Amino acid sequence: MLADSSASLTTIKESDYLYYDDSIGPNWCKVDGDSAPTYDWLCAKVAIPFMPQPLRLVPSPRRSHIYGSGIIGLKILGIETSCDETAAGVVEDGRLMNSNVISSQVELHSVYGGVVPEVASRQHVRDIVPVVEKAVADCGMALDEVDVVAVTHGPGLGGSLITGLNTAKAISYSLGVPLMGVNHLEGHIYASWLTEHNPGEDPGFPLLCLIASGGHTDLLLMEGHGTYKLLGRTRDDAAGEAFDKAARILGLGFPGGPEIQRVAEGADGEERLPRAWMRDTLDFSFSGLKTALLHLAQAKGVYPPGSKDLGEQELARLVREMAAAFQESVVDVISAKLVDAAKRYHAKGLVLGGGVTANTRLRQEIIKRSPLPVIIPPPILCTDNGAMIAACAYYQYQRGQQYGLELDIDPGLSLG
Image 1 (cartoon, one colour):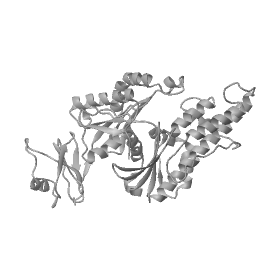
Image 2 (cartoon, rainbow, N blue to C red; image 1 turned 180 degrees about the vertical axis):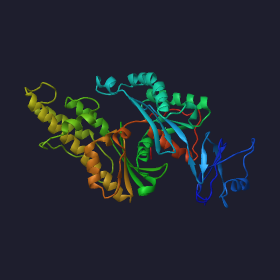
Image 3 (tube, rainbow, N blue to C red; image 1 turned 30 degrees about the vertical axis):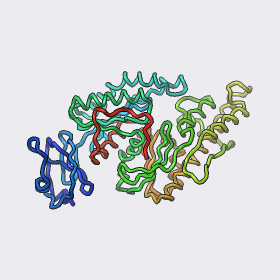
Image 4 (tube, one colour; image 1 turned 90 degrees about the horizontal axis):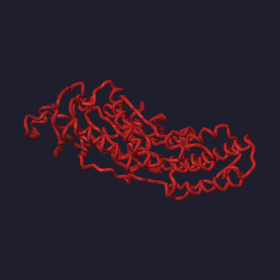
């Protein structure tokens, strides 16, 4: 075991190597010349009486320090371009968010009622440099003070992903710092590490995670940093996709989730839509709910627009009640399955991530039903952002993961 940091203080600047051991964790050492340090030399250098073997040595970033057993001052630039947000953020030591800049394309795509991949990728090309520059400037630092560059390499839209990845590669190569590839879905989980909580310590692992982002609605058991078990996923439409399609049926704007939440406020609960419980599984299905809404909207004369001569107030009332019914059906199923999975797999807490988890009703209902602590990032961190990518990369780096310039995009990348 490493000595307590107050008793063992070693600060080594301009380190050359990070040495890693599963029972000790990462630490720093200085290497003279081209020779790797010996086992005895390492023990003496950091005042450790015993260090289990074998050790893995990986290149370390510049300007990082060791304080007792912890890495401090590690600044990671995270870049996110998986869909229609161009985002970058700088996070220090995996938890301190120094900046988080997001350029949204919502207005650009709203006229189409959804994200157009080619339009999204072209806009990323226009926005990526100013977004990265602002993320660095907001920290009061220069680009060459970045220690590690992290980037989403999947899942997502191919044209969007490649813009962020090539930008990250260029920065990594020019600065001579490590490049880290991050799974977008895992990044959403680590958004919770940017709050006042440290879920890995309080309540601790295992954690039951809900990722409701884009085309994904996944339940995962997080057994430790980087260790996941997929418990359930959608078999057709994801919740976010279903919200977008429901909003289109009801004549609302894009994105659908915020629009349905806004319109549903003040509903009397006059309408009710079915729940796809899919018994004996933790999987989800939302396509049937979408179809049920379509049939109801047709029967009430809401869809297609103008099919019935409805007054303005009556139309608004019907849309409000149907929006609320749709929202309640989604919230009911997700909340019930999430709480059931946590009980079944003996989780110590729940972690929510992804754009759908910004929904107020969903957050309220999960907190109400769960006997366990529920960690939910603020809405700005539920949507796609670069800070969550940087936070995730910190824990990857601590595990000794390495990526080179051969890293490629993986639009169908999964987790668990």
